[in-house]
Image (cartoon, rainbow, N blue to C red; front, side):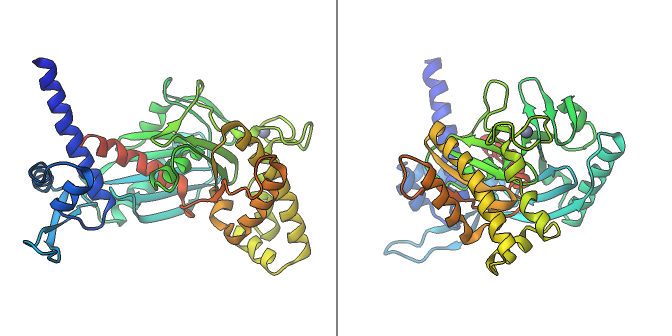
Length: 375
Ligand SMILES: [Zn+2]
Protein backbone atom coordinates (compact mmCIF):
# COMPACT_ATOMS: atom_id res chain seq x y z
CA UNK A 1 0.00 0.00 0.00
CA UNK A 2 2.84 2.32 0.96
CA UNK A 3 4.53 1.50 -2.35
CA UNK A 4 1.38 2.21 -4.30
CA UNK A 5 1.08 5.57 -2.56
CA UNK A 6 4.69 6.43 -3.38
CA UNK A 7 4.07 5.50 -6.99
CA UNK A 8 0.97 7.68 -7.17
CA UNK A 9 2.94 10.61 -5.81
CA UNK A 10 5.66 9.99 -8.39
CA UNK A 11 3.12 9.80 -11.23
CA UNK A 12 1.57 13.06 -10.04
CA UNK A 13 4.97 14.75 -9.84
CA UNK A 14 5.99 13.44 -13.28
CA UNK A 15 2.74 14.67 -14.78
CA UNK A 16 3.22 18.12 -13.34
CA UNK A 17 6.84 18.28 -14.47
CA UNK A 18 5.99 17.10 -17.98
CA UNK A 19 3.16 19.63 -18.22
CA UNK A 20 5.41 22.45 -17.02
CA UNK A 21 8.18 21.52 -19.48
CA UNK A 22 5.58 21.31 -22.27
CA UNK A 23 4.35 24.83 -21.46
CA UNK A 24 7.95 26.11 -21.34
CA UNK A 25 8.60 24.68 -24.82
CA UNK A 26 5.54 26.25 -26.41
CA UNK A 27 4.69 29.93 -26.84
CA UNK A 28 1.01 29.56 -26.06
CA UNK A 29 -0.96 26.42 -25.33
CA UNK A 30 -4.19 25.26 -23.67
CA UNK A 31 -5.45 22.48 -21.43
CA UNK A 32 -7.04 20.52 -24.33
CA UNK A 33 -3.77 20.76 -26.28
CA UNK A 34 -1.71 19.59 -23.27
CA UNK A 35 -4.15 16.75 -22.67
CA UNK A 36 -3.97 15.63 -26.31
CA UNK A 37 -0.19 15.94 -26.80
CA UNK A 38 0.85 14.46 -23.45
CA UNK A 39 -1.87 11.78 -23.52
CA UNK A 40 -3.30 12.68 -20.12
CA UNK A 41 -6.92 13.34 -19.15
CA UNK A 42 -8.31 16.86 -19.49
CA UNK A 43 -9.14 17.08 -15.73
CA UNK A 44 -5.50 16.12 -14.89
CA UNK A 45 -4.15 18.79 -17.28
CA UNK A 46 -6.57 21.39 -15.91
CA UNK A 47 -5.80 20.63 -12.27
CA UNK A 48 -2.05 20.80 -12.84
CA UNK A 49 -2.11 24.00 -14.83
CA UNK A 50 -4.32 25.55 -12.13
CA UNK A 51 -1.66 24.69 -9.54
CA UNK A 52 1.09 26.07 -11.77
CA UNK A 53 -0.90 29.30 -12.21
CA UNK A 54 -1.38 29.59 -8.43
CA UNK A 55 2.38 29.19 -7.93
CA UNK A 56 3.05 31.95 -10.47
CA UNK A 57 4.85 29.65 -12.94
CA UNK A 58 2.18 29.84 -15.65
CA UNK A 59 -0.05 32.71 -16.77
CA UNK A 60 -3.43 32.82 -18.45
CA UNK A 61 -2.98 35.15 -21.39
CA UNK A 62 -6.53 35.29 -22.80
CA UNK A 63 -8.61 32.87 -24.85
CA UNK A 64 -7.58 30.80 -27.87
CA UNK A 65 -9.57 30.97 -31.11
CA UNK A 66 -12.53 28.62 -31.04
CA UNK A 67 -12.16 25.33 -32.90
CA UNK A 68 -15.85 24.59 -32.62
CA UNK A 69 -16.56 24.34 -28.91
CA UNK A 70 -15.95 26.59 -25.93
CA UNK A 71 -12.89 28.81 -26.32
CA UNK A 72 -10.02 27.38 -24.24
CA UNK A 73 -7.88 29.55 -21.97
CA UNK A 74 -4.51 30.47 -23.50
CA UNK A 75 -1.65 29.42 -21.23
CA UNK A 76 1.97 30.57 -21.33
CA UNK A 77 4.98 30.05 -19.09
CA UNK A 78 5.88 32.90 -16.76
CA UNK A 79 9.44 32.47 -17.96
CA UNK A 80 10.72 35.41 -15.93
CA UNK A 81 9.45 33.91 -12.65
CA UNK A 82 13.05 32.95 -11.92
CA UNK A 83 16.26 33.92 -13.72
CA UNK A 84 19.74 32.51 -13.77
CA UNK A 85 23.13 34.08 -14.37
CA UNK A 86 25.99 32.54 -16.34
CA UNK A 87 29.61 33.54 -15.80
CA UNK A 88 32.28 32.40 -18.24
CA UNK A 89 35.85 32.89 -17.05
CA UNK A 90 38.57 32.88 -19.73
CA UNK A 91 42.23 33.91 -19.70
CA UNK A 92 41.57 37.56 -20.51
CA UNK A 93 37.83 38.13 -20.21
CA UNK A 94 34.76 37.36 -18.21
CA UNK A 95 31.35 37.05 -19.82
CA UNK A 96 28.08 37.50 -17.98
CA UNK A 97 24.65 36.48 -19.22
CA UNK A 98 21.18 36.43 -17.72
CA UNK A 99 18.61 33.90 -18.93
CA UNK A 100 14.98 33.15 -18.16
CA UNK A 101 13.40 29.75 -17.58
CA UNK A 102 12.80 29.27 -21.30
CA UNK A 103 16.57 29.60 -21.80
CA UNK A 104 16.24 32.94 -23.56
CA UNK A 105 19.20 35.27 -23.31
CA UNK A 106 17.97 38.48 -21.65
CA UNK A 107 21.20 40.36 -21.18
CA UNK A 108 24.92 39.88 -21.68
CA UNK A 109 28.23 41.61 -21.12
CA UNK A 110 31.84 40.73 -21.97
CA UNK A 111 34.51 42.48 -19.94
CA UNK A 112 38.26 42.56 -20.38
CA UNK A 113 39.65 41.26 -17.09
CA UNK A 114 42.84 39.16 -17.25
CA UNK A 115 42.61 36.19 -14.91
CA UNK A 116 44.68 36.03 -11.76
CA UNK A 117 44.15 33.59 -8.94
CA UNK A 118 43.83 36.20 -6.24
CA UNK A 119 41.22 37.52 -3.83
CA UNK A 120 41.39 40.84 -5.69
CA UNK A 121 40.35 39.20 -8.97
CA UNK A 122 37.40 37.28 -7.48
CA UNK A 123 36.20 40.35 -5.57
CA UNK A 124 36.31 42.30 -8.82
CA UNK A 125 34.32 39.58 -10.62
CA UNK A 126 31.73 39.61 -7.83
CA UNK A 127 31.40 43.38 -7.99
CA UNK A 128 30.95 43.25 -11.82
CA UNK A 129 28.35 40.52 -11.40
CA UNK A 130 26.42 42.49 -8.77
CA UNK A 131 26.45 45.55 -11.05
CA UNK A 132 25.27 43.40 -13.94
CA UNK A 133 22.31 42.14 -11.87
CA UNK A 134 21.49 45.62 -10.56
CA UNK A 135 21.53 47.03 -14.10
CA UNK A 136 18.98 44.36 -15.07
CA UNK A 137 16.64 45.78 -12.40
CA UNK A 138 15.88 42.28 -11.13
CA UNK A 139 14.86 41.50 -7.55
CA UNK A 140 17.61 39.40 -6.02
CA UNK A 141 15.21 36.68 -4.86
CA UNK A 142 14.39 35.93 -8.49
CA UNK A 143 18.00 34.92 -9.19
CA UNK A 144 18.34 31.15 -8.84
CA UNK A 145 22.11 31.17 -8.81
CA UNK A 146 25.25 31.51 -10.90
CA UNK A 147 26.46 28.92 -13.36
CA UNK A 148 30.23 29.30 -13.66
CA UNK A 149 32.04 28.06 -16.76
CA UNK A 150 35.79 27.49 -16.34
CA UNK A 151 38.42 26.40 -18.89
CA UNK A 152 39.69 23.44 -16.89
CA UNK A 153 38.83 20.05 -15.45
CA UNK A 154 35.91 20.52 -13.09
CA UNK A 155 35.68 17.40 -10.92
CA UNK A 156 32.22 17.57 -9.38
CA UNK A 157 32.76 14.42 -7.32
CA UNK A 158 35.75 15.90 -5.54
CA UNK A 159 34.27 19.38 -5.65
CA UNK A 160 37.38 20.91 -7.13
CA UNK A 161 38.87 22.53 -10.19
CA UNK A 162 41.43 19.73 -10.68
CA UNK A 163 43.54 21.82 -13.02
CA UNK A 164 43.45 24.47 -15.63
CA UNK A 165 46.50 24.94 -17.83
CA UNK A 166 44.98 28.09 -19.24
CA UNK A 167 44.46 29.72 -15.85
CA UNK A 168 47.57 28.03 -14.38
CA UNK A 169 45.81 26.74 -11.27
CA UNK A 170 45.22 23.27 -9.86
CA UNK A 171 43.31 21.57 -7.08
CA UNK A 172 41.22 24.59 -6.15
CA UNK A 173 38.12 23.66 -4.11
CA UNK A 174 34.97 24.90 -5.83
CA UNK A 175 33.86 26.22 -2.43
CA UNK A 176 36.78 28.65 -2.65
CA UNK A 177 35.25 30.29 -5.75
CA UNK A 178 31.74 30.18 -4.26
CA UNK A 179 32.89 32.00 -1.14
CA UNK A 180 33.24 35.24 -3.13
CA UNK A 181 29.64 35.31 -4.35
CA UNK A 182 26.37 35.84 -2.52
CA UNK A 183 24.36 33.46 -4.74
CA UNK A 184 24.50 29.66 -4.98
CA UNK A 185 27.22 28.68 -7.47
CA UNK A 186 27.30 25.70 -9.87
CA UNK A 187 30.33 24.80 -11.98
CA UNK A 188 30.91 23.42 -15.46
CA UNK A 189 33.88 23.01 -17.76
CA UNK A 190 33.60 25.64 -20.56
CA UNK A 191 33.19 23.21 -23.46
CA UNK A 192 30.72 21.17 -21.44
CA UNK A 193 28.76 24.36 -20.82
CA UNK A 194 28.62 24.98 -24.58
CA UNK A 195 27.52 21.38 -25.12
CA UNK A 196 24.85 21.81 -22.46
CA UNK A 197 23.43 24.88 -24.23
CA UNK A 198 23.27 22.97 -27.54
CA UNK A 199 21.71 19.97 -25.80
CA UNK A 200 18.97 22.10 -24.33
CA UNK A 201 18.07 23.39 -27.80
CA UNK A 202 16.96 19.84 -28.68
CA UNK A 203 18.21 20.21 -32.23
CA UNK A 204 20.00 16.88 -32.13
CA UNK A 205 18.45 13.52 -31.52
CA UNK A 206 20.39 11.43 -29.05
CA UNK A 207 24.10 11.79 -28.52
CA UNK A 208 26.33 14.46 -30.08
CA UNK A 209 29.82 15.82 -29.60
CA UNK A 210 30.32 19.56 -29.12
CA UNK A 211 33.68 20.83 -30.37
CA UNK A 212 34.49 24.16 -28.79
CA UNK A 213 36.89 26.20 -30.93
CA UNK A 214 37.55 29.24 -28.77
CA UNK A 215 40.65 30.77 -27.14
CA UNK A 216 41.32 27.16 -26.27
CA UNK A 217 39.98 24.00 -27.88
CA UNK A 218 37.82 21.58 -25.92
CA UNK A 219 34.79 19.42 -26.27
CA UNK A 220 31.88 17.80 -24.52
CA UNK A 221 29.63 14.81 -25.06
CA UNK A 222 25.88 15.21 -24.64
CA UNK A 223 23.95 11.94 -24.57
CA UNK A 224 20.42 13.20 -25.19
CA UNK A 225 19.60 13.91 -21.55
CA UNK A 226 22.79 15.32 -20.07
CA UNK A 227 26.57 15.58 -20.19
CA UNK A 228 28.86 12.57 -20.16
CA UNK A 229 31.62 13.43 -17.71
CA UNK A 230 33.96 10.44 -17.56
CA UNK A 231 35.95 8.81 -14.74
CA UNK A 232 38.05 11.90 -14.08
CA UNK A 233 35.64 14.46 -15.56
CA UNK A 234 37.84 14.74 -18.66
CA UNK A 235 35.44 13.50 -21.34
CA UNK A 236 35.84 15.37 -24.58
CA UNK A 237 39.17 17.06 -23.76
CA UNK A 238 40.20 16.87 -27.40
CA UNK A 239 42.18 20.11 -27.37
CA UNK A 240 45.16 18.11 -26.20
CA UNK A 241 44.64 15.20 -28.55
CA UNK A 242 47.73 14.80 -30.77
CA UNK A 243 47.13 15.70 -34.40
CA UNK A 244 50.83 16.04 -35.35
CA UNK A 245 53.28 13.70 -33.58
CA UNK A 246 56.03 15.86 -32.09
CA UNK A 247 54.49 18.90 -33.72
CA UNK A 248 54.47 22.50 -32.57
CA UNK A 249 54.66 23.08 -28.78
CA UNK A 250 51.40 23.53 -26.90
CA UNK A 251 50.87 25.66 -23.81
CA UNK A 252 50.14 22.41 -21.93
CA UNK A 253 53.78 21.35 -22.28
CA UNK A 254 53.17 18.66 -24.95
CA UNK A 255 53.70 18.90 -28.68
CA UNK A 256 51.34 18.70 -31.65
CA UNK A 257 48.05 19.13 -29.75
CA UNK A 258 44.90 20.10 -31.68
CA UNK A 259 44.79 23.30 -29.61
CA UNK A 260 48.00 24.54 -31.24
CA UNK A 261 46.49 24.27 -34.74
CA UNK A 262 42.80 24.96 -34.20
CA UNK A 263 42.34 27.53 -31.45
CA UNK A 264 40.36 30.58 -32.57
CA UNK A 265 43.53 32.63 -32.09
CA UNK A 266 45.15 30.90 -35.10
CA UNK A 267 42.66 32.79 -37.24
CA UNK A 268 41.91 35.94 -35.28
CA UNK A 269 45.61 36.84 -34.82
CA UNK A 270 45.77 37.45 -38.58
CA UNK A 271 43.05 40.13 -38.29
CA UNK A 272 44.13 42.11 -35.24
CA UNK A 273 42.36 39.75 -32.88
CA UNK A 274 39.04 39.86 -34.73
CA UNK A 275 37.58 36.55 -35.84
CA UNK A 276 34.86 38.39 -37.80
CA UNK A 277 37.71 40.29 -39.47
CA UNK A 278 39.37 37.03 -40.45
CA UNK A 279 36.21 35.65 -42.07
CA UNK A 280 35.64 38.95 -43.87
CA UNK A 281 39.14 38.78 -45.41
CA UNK A 282 38.52 35.13 -46.29
CA UNK A 283 35.30 36.15 -48.05
CA UNK A 284 37.26 38.75 -50.01
CA UNK A 285 39.53 35.93 -51.14
CA UNK A 286 42.79 37.36 -49.80
CA UNK A 287 45.38 34.64 -50.53
CA UNK A 288 47.09 34.59 -47.10
CA UNK A 289 43.70 34.18 -45.40
CA UNK A 290 42.62 31.50 -47.88
CA UNK A 291 45.86 29.59 -47.20
CA UNK A 292 45.50 29.93 -43.42
CA UNK A 293 41.92 28.64 -43.61
CA UNK A 294 43.04 25.73 -45.75
CA UNK A 295 45.70 24.76 -43.18
CA UNK A 296 43.31 25.27 -40.26
CA UNK A 297 40.55 23.13 -41.76
CA UNK A 298 43.03 20.37 -42.69
CA UNK A 299 43.95 19.90 -39.03
CA UNK A 300 40.34 20.34 -37.96
CA UNK A 301 39.30 17.56 -40.36
CA UNK A 302 41.77 15.17 -38.68
CA UNK A 303 40.14 15.87 -35.31
CA UNK A 304 36.60 15.60 -36.68
CA UNK A 305 37.35 12.29 -38.35
CA UNK A 306 38.95 10.86 -35.20
CA UNK A 307 36.05 11.96 -33.00
CA UNK A 308 33.51 10.58 -35.48
CA UNK A 309 35.34 7.23 -35.61
CA UNK A 310 35.23 6.87 -31.83
CA UNK A 311 31.74 8.15 -31.11
CA UNK A 312 29.79 7.71 -34.39
CA UNK A 313 27.53 10.69 -33.70
CA UNK A 314 26.95 14.26 -34.92
CA UNK A 315 29.70 16.75 -34.18
CA UNK A 316 28.63 20.34 -33.52
CA UNK A 317 31.25 22.94 -34.40
CA UNK A 318 30.98 25.52 -31.64
CA UNK A 319 32.98 28.04 -29.66
CA UNK A 320 34.01 31.40 -31.18
CA UNK A 321 34.87 29.81 -34.55
CA UNK A 322 31.55 27.93 -34.64
CA UNK A 323 29.76 31.22 -33.98
CA UNK A 324 31.42 33.00 -36.93
CA UNK A 325 31.93 30.16 -39.42
CA UNK A 326 28.74 30.69 -41.48
CA UNK A 327 28.82 29.12 -44.94
CA UNK A 328 32.48 28.26 -44.51
CA UNK A 329 31.38 25.16 -42.62
CA UNK A 330 31.03 23.57 -46.07
CA UNK A 331 34.84 23.55 -46.37
CA UNK A 332 35.05 21.74 -43.05
CA UNK A 333 32.44 19.15 -44.10
CA UNK A 334 34.21 18.55 -47.40
CA UNK A 335 37.59 17.98 -45.76
CA UNK A 336 36.11 15.79 -43.02
CA UNK A 337 34.38 13.68 -45.72
CA UNK A 338 37.66 13.31 -47.63
CA UNK A 339 39.27 11.83 -44.51
CA UNK A 340 36.43 9.56 -43.47
CA UNK A 341 36.19 6.10 -45.07
CA UNK A 342 32.43 5.79 -44.48
CA UNK A 343 31.06 9.23 -45.29
CA UNK A 344 30.76 10.90 -48.68
CA UNK A 345 29.29 14.17 -47.40
CA UNK A 346 30.17 14.43 -43.71
CA UNK A 347 26.65 15.55 -42.85
CA UNK A 348 27.58 14.66 -39.28
CA UNK A 349 29.40 18.00 -39.02
CA UNK A 350 26.86 20.61 -37.88
CA UNK A 351 27.07 24.32 -37.17
CA UNK A 352 26.22 25.31 -33.59
CA UNK A 353 22.84 26.84 -32.72
CA UNK A 354 24.19 29.21 -30.09
CA UNK A 355 26.55 31.58 -31.88
CA UNK A 356 27.07 33.92 -28.97
CA UNK A 357 28.25 33.32 -25.39
CA UNK A 358 27.36 29.63 -25.58
CA UNK A 359 29.48 28.68 -22.54
CA UNK A 360 28.04 31.38 -20.27
CA UNK A 361 24.52 30.61 -21.47
CA UNK A 362 24.99 26.86 -20.99
CA UNK A 363 26.19 27.47 -17.45
CA UNK A 364 23.10 29.61 -16.77
CA UNK A 365 20.80 26.98 -18.31
CA UNK A 366 22.25 24.29 -16.05
CA UNK A 367 21.14 26.38 -13.07
CA UNK A 368 17.64 26.84 -14.52
CA UNK A 369 17.37 23.08 -15.12
CA UNK A 370 18.01 22.35 -11.43
CA UNK A 371 15.00 24.51 -10.63
CA UNK A 372 12.79 23.06 -13.38
CA UNK A 373 13.51 19.54 -12.07
CA UNK A 374 11.90 20.48 -8.76
CA UNK A 375 8.55 21.55 -10.28
ZN1 LIG B 1 48.27 20.60 -25.38
